[in-house]
Length: 372
Image (cartoon, rainbow, N blue to C red; front, side, top):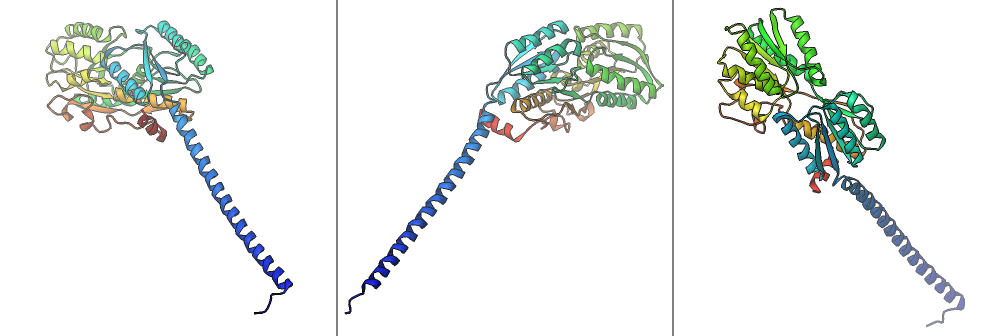
């Protein structure tokens, strides 16, 4: 075998060193790629974690519900809807009821702000009593969402029912049942935003239907059902003959309940009653075949509470929200209901669109509910 020359030996060593270096660099590049991939994954994980933390921060919120009044079963079911949705989000609700005293309502709003509630829901009320307190809440970064309140303040979302549509639909049904003519009793009260909107529709209806005559009108917000009953009893005595009164139109279910009891107790089966709003108690009266209350236009009061809470939590989450949200109503007629008694939870099986509104729901709310 021949000996390898020095030059050849050096060349061989150089080749070996180059190969070794190349292998080493390849390993380093692979490690760098793995490291970059790991950092990218960590960044995504941190971003996801921060998103979850954002939703998690909404748990345990204290929500104030400031109400002008909490009269009747409609209000009771509305409160149930509010509490149900807040509790699903992991929060707690405290109700501040003012017994129809606007000064007390204003004081309750101030108390909610001073006690550091995270969000404020307002039910009814007037701007004169609420504007100053609402502006103070907004200055302190406390979000506000109102229902049927006379408010027009930037940053405040106001929910309402389609009051004019509810009034129009019930009045058109009254007209149809009465054959386009007759004498009616109107029960309503001024000073409430939803009542004023319903009254606008009533005025337009009466102007367009001269053969339908209003023989009297009354109504008060204090003890409304009891007052409506006693007032209706007096009117029935004033108009004792069949045909004197064709129908009664009540702009609030509390009025309808009182008037219906008076008519039924007087045995005036010829008089039909049409109302607005709906609760379990109202539904029982409508289903009673011996009672005068035959139809009502309404939104599920629990749905109203649920939707209002969702918009408040949108604000707490930092989402952009609409300033006005209008809830469509349905008409509930006795002749479309089953003979067996049903409640408002079951009503959706018979009246399409009654409940289950998804207004205000966002994807992150599902995550928040699942976390509870």
